[in-house]
Amino acid sequence: MTDIVLTHGTVVTMNERREIIRDGAVAIDGNRISAVGKTTEIKASHRADIELDCDNKLILPGLVDCHVHLAQALIRGCADDLSLVPWLSERVLPLQGSYSPREGELSAKLCCIEMIKSGTTTFVESLLHWKYGFNEIAKVVDATGIRGVLSKSMMNLRGYADQPDAIPEGMAEDGETTMRQALEMIKKWHGKADNRIHVWFGARTPGGCTIDFYREIAEQARKHRTGITIHLGEVKQDIDYMRKEFKMTPMEFMRHCGVVGPHVIYAHGVWIPQKDFKILSETNSTVCHCPASNLKLASGFAPVPEMLHAGVNVGLGCDGGPSNNCYDMIREMKLAAIVHKARLLDPEVLPAEHVLEMATLNGARATLWGKELGSLESGKLADLIVVDQRNPHLVPVRNPVSNLVYTANGSDVDTVIIDGKIVMRGRKVKTIDETEIVERAQEVGLEVDKRLGLETGPSWPVK
Image (cartoon, rainbow, N blue to C red; front, side, top):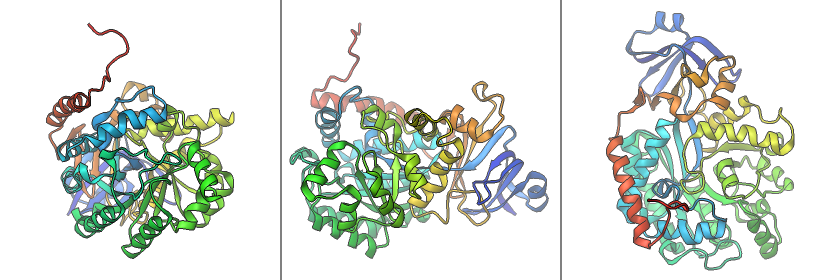
């Protein structure tokens, strides 16, 4: 007896041949996919406890968000239309620095709900400060049913590039303590929740860590067979700082510190020069493209088509509430697909199929779940989503992949299955009380603003 069978859908397999199966079906036993094929074939060979009719719907692998800030969902919209320095030093860091574990947990719940409802089944949290409540946030990931990497923030300096005191007191941490905490969390949480939770090292940007500390992080990651994520080349100041301080390019510096390899994700990569593409490719390292964040903060345009052409693994990420304002990977896919066409004046650059690969296969590879996720194939983990194609803005459907990337929104996701469990069905999240969390987040989010005396409302008069 099979646990779940999804039938009569258009199945975008993302397998090696990139097959699309019309009137297709996916069978799930336990937490694994047991069969993929035509509905008639699968129903003939599999009797299911639960059958989900996916007529006029798209069935595809769950999306992978390679760069998330869970704690920033609660400060969504706190720093709109500001340049990077005041955005960071006057709004984002002070607000996060005032958090209690209660607020960190609430923000994580809000973020996980949003990701699930928009089709993200796996995420990489990049900088989880201890004060947010690491243990409670891990419990949130466990309870909501999502799959996630939780990266403990690592620093032993308070700088950001050439600004030595950029990290305010409320966000400052010391190297010895962060290392101890990270190792404790690896021991406690890595591989827990049926292996849905992994714990990585979230290294601060150059200026926030010494070379020796980066090397210690790299050594511990190798020892514990886990990953590292770091913001790199997000703004031009990063490049100028590494050139001036170390006489190196970003990837020359990362290689010098030992922070390279298939277990490393560099967020943004906007200003990584072309000469670094070879190092990225040869070390099988990943760059996470965050187009909405880069555009909103006017950081620049990551050379994504050029990186892909050079053999670099590039994933996609939404970043956080203040820099993107949403955690919708479907919206992020569209932006990634169109921005480079305009940048390079070439409408054939980065077609929809390549962007979907970035959001599935490339992301899975980046998270070290590459052999388990990213495609719908027998034996892989049952992480998949169902997108309703009957909404007016999605009709008529000619090419289901381009329709998904260029036309859909996260709100078109109808059903989400993670690790073989139905986490959302009919837009109803089954693992957490969405209404309660949304109400609390509205109240608590404004309380955080008031605590610091920040005016974050409209610039126009409000009566």
